[in-house]
Amino acid sequence: MKILALDTARRTGWAIGAPNQRVRFGHVTFPDAGIDDVGWIMDEFIRWLDPLIKLERPDAIVYEAPFVSGQTNQAAAYILLSLAGCVELVARWNGLAGDLWKATPHQRNIHFIGTNSIGREKLKLATIAKCRELGADVRNDDEADACSLLSYAWADIQVAGAEPLQWKE
Image (cartoon, rainbow, N blue to C red):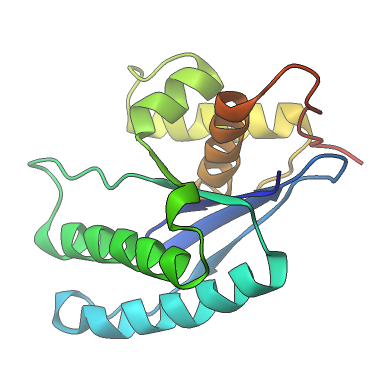
């Protein structure tokens, strides 16, 4: 099974994993349009995601469920929720609507680093450190979050005898 993991935001982290293949990951940055032109960000996001899905042909997609708290500004909340809708739309276009999973930051953090209660900045640093410990030389917390989402999804679908993810060559 090949899984595409997405940490959606204006700077989106992505990771792809499949049996007997090294995990690949990266990030892409979308325009800083603010709340006045979220359509532009959505358009750019869809133009990036749809060809990626067509090229990689994942069996499933996991993405971070948008977390909007009272401290999240309106523009950021609007972008996060809009991009989640874009993931679901593009997954549907590509026949993956039934193979689309959401994971909360809490679920991902508990699985990957064993805690969710050390503060946002420490969580980011711990996630990056864990990725590097596994052999994934991530460049930022978006790539690290995508890798941790991939790990969470892989563990969730793991069946007896399934190959583990390969983080190193």
